[in-house]
Every structure is written in structure tokens, then in C-alpha cells.
Length: 260
Image (tube, rainbow, N blue to C red; front, side, top):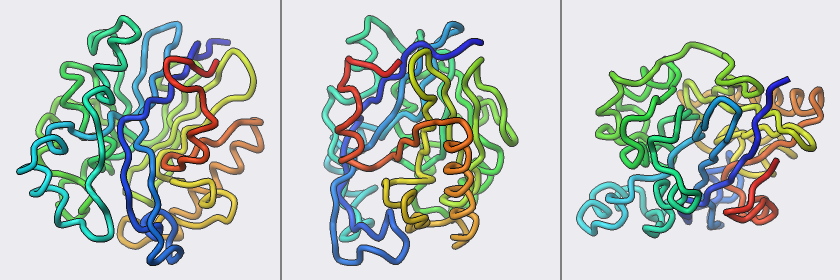
């Protein structure tokens, strides 16, 4: 059976916010620091990037930083990101460029997941139809409209599908309309499920707590996705990787080390 060969967690920045953003109705007044992650997956058939982090220009330019992120204060602070945390810098350290990425799989279109697409031009981008349609309504404050500029060139999917042998797109809507997680078979040990923002923290999984923000306030759908991920992990003896949990992230291989 074909499997992925290596999986690299990439720390593309950090963000400080009120915990209730990650855990619905929990954590008012308590601020946490969260990693902003992307993942590079090497397979026998090519390389997949799950998410792309933020648009570095919006963070490094003071005018753009104020324009895009000041309205989110005080609940959400602007992201912190260095030039070394951009996707191309990680690729350079592996002797790669954006041309070596075969698919950029966007779990959802919030700015901390899709903003960095500007740093991997020309790549094939996968996104869900429901996700793109919801983003275009301008009703989701986590989506920056300019980051959808190339959307007509993206490959739009509906529902679950095999991204590559051993790598399966898993529908986990709730946080956003078309949120997708990723199931990855690896040559050693258990499979890995990248939860994306279906589960920001280990707490979301352990206590079955919905994310603080749910599309159309549908926390029941978000909870159903959490339970589905847990059931899949139990059935496949897979590891669940929450997406914005620093304690969990620190237990992962530190780049350029990888999980295989």
C-alpha cells in the first residue's frame, strides 16, 4: 500500500488571543499563545502542503498590519511572524522551491491558513466548494477578500476524496462551511490525522468542545466533526494532531526533523 514518506510540521508564526476563540464558551478573559502551523507531506508521487500560514506582507508592513488586524483587537492580537517562518524559507532549507509542491491543500480559508498562498504561486490549490462559496459571502471575518483573488484558478472539490495514495481528505465542517482535515498513512507507526481548526486544542478533542467560532453558529455540526475525528482515530489507531496547541506542537519533531 502506498503511504506518505515524511511529514514535516512547519511553524509559520504565532498568535495571541482570548482562549474562548478556540473553546466555545470557555476561557473568557484568559489569553493564550498559539502556533500557526502548516504541514509539508512527501509522498512517492509528489509533495503536498497542508495550509500555507499567513501573508507575511500584511504582518511586516505596519500600515497593512493595522488595516487588517487592528479591528480584531483586543480579543485577537496580530500574528507574529518572521521572514524565516515563510513557506519558501522552509522549502529552501530542504533544497526545494514552490515548484516542488504538487498540491496545496487548504483546510479552510481563514487568513492564518490561506494567506501564505501568495508565497507559493503557480501551485495547484485544492479547496472545497462550500468553503469558497461561504468565503465569498464576506460574512466570515476570518477571511480576507484579497486572499481569494486567484480563486478562479483553484481546483474546487466537493466532499471527501483521495488527495494521493495513502492521503485522504476528511470532511469536518462546523468551524467553517467546508472545513477539511487530512488522514495520512505513514511508513512507521500510526497514521496521523491533521485536524486543522476542527480542533484547535487537545481540549477540543478530550472534552468535545466546539471551536469558539462556528459558521452560521452551528456548534452541533462542529461537535459532530470532532466526534467523527475521534471515531476515525479509534478505528484506524491514528494520532489526532490539534492545530493551535503549543503544548502538543512542542512534542512534534522540530524542523528539519520529520515524522515518518
